[in-house]
Length: 307
Image (tube, rainbow, N blue to C red; front, side):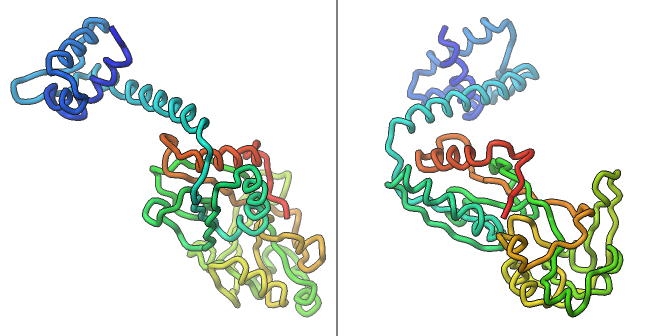
């Protein structure tokens, strides 16, 4: 008995709802499909399907077996795809979406390296803050912050984590001084993201080396935006305090354009994930890009984005 073929036929019978329709779909005779199913049940020593003159239904064992069979068949198809695509020269246009926070300091430096290795792939990169539906908008792959909504059907691979820092420009500090403590932030002008949960309060997780004790600090926002670069420019102009993920800072700290405040406090972090529609039957261009990026972030549980 060809067990793999038996599994494929069993899965197809369930999918089609009858032996006859499964036989047509697989271009076999009804007798062959029936024999395969009988041999499979005999081999397993249990009934997988309840048969009546009107319909088929799975037994409890059949339902459990079907779930495993589908996973096995998916893994086999995926393995075949890897072998098949590896023999083909990747080409075509690769459409990439990225959140701005990742694109400027992390994604952009990777693109020339990838292009040198795969010169026949055209890179079409779109950068925006808004939530993007990869399938609906025709993207092959995307880079999302964990603050964004990601469709549960997507495959998401966490790449790295960025610590959130509180910063201000030297001009702001010269004019308004440094907050005396975390609570004193409430008395300062703040540059804020347009997320509802940050609109009126900033969250302090606690001091480093101590048990977490999250608390909310009321703030006064003088600028609210959904764009990190807008907030950065306002901060550089001395307009207020700003929360910045380390990935967004570039060399602003090392150059002295911004000053980090309260380094002893933990303000949380943000993760970035590489997202794509399916592991199965990825095109050569997507699979090679996924593998390339994964090698650049081998330890997502400990990597930090550094400007």
